[in-house]
Length: 253
Image (cartoon, rainbow, N blue to C red; front, side, top):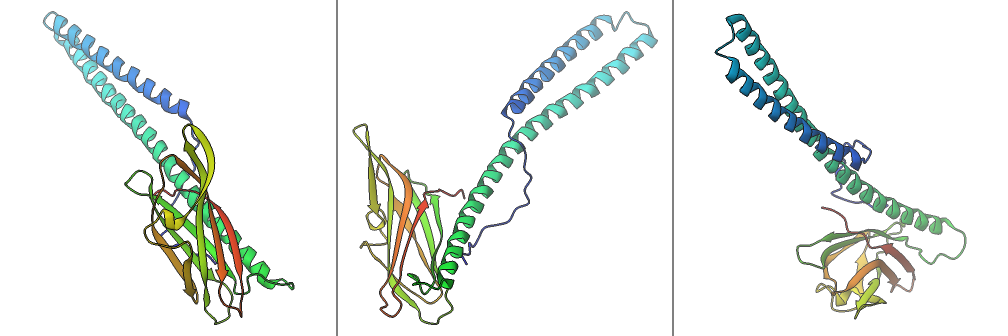
């Protein structure tokens, strides 16, 4: 079965996405701060104007009131800080949840491909994939350069037979190319995008699994949509043809 290494498991908390709540929190925080500022100004002005004319008991009461309001102001400032922190946490939580969902979606798709391979191996009819070749997770991550990506693909042999798999792999990226304001479908072979390979066919030779990894640069105006993969065996004893079309999905680091 497809194994994805380096995918950390995080404790997740699913939180509803409420953009109006974030806006309300910021507006509420603004008015709280404005109210605190005005209150402090009026208290200071009133205290300065009346301090000399007030008797001792009244001055003590005013002083106590000032201390109480100062404490309330500090509590309100803390509430505003908490509101901002909660807003930041909500945004980060949404990002974490989105990243986790993407990773799980990719893993589920790989598992479903494995299940399909196992079912074909168990079928009584002619099997076009006798060695159980499975196309695992195809990872694509954004690189620093515009239009540049890092890719990694894992191929596995699920059958228990000892014979290694010998064959070739073709990878194409299909999508839409914009030329002079017009969108046209286009399919580009991996060797045209990546310096790691100089030919359309990528040689395969493995007993259990093989990693295909490298960097690619998409041409300007090209929007990728699908990844087309074709695996063909060169072993006459175990001929096999495996085709898959995957969604182009860029994983977050």
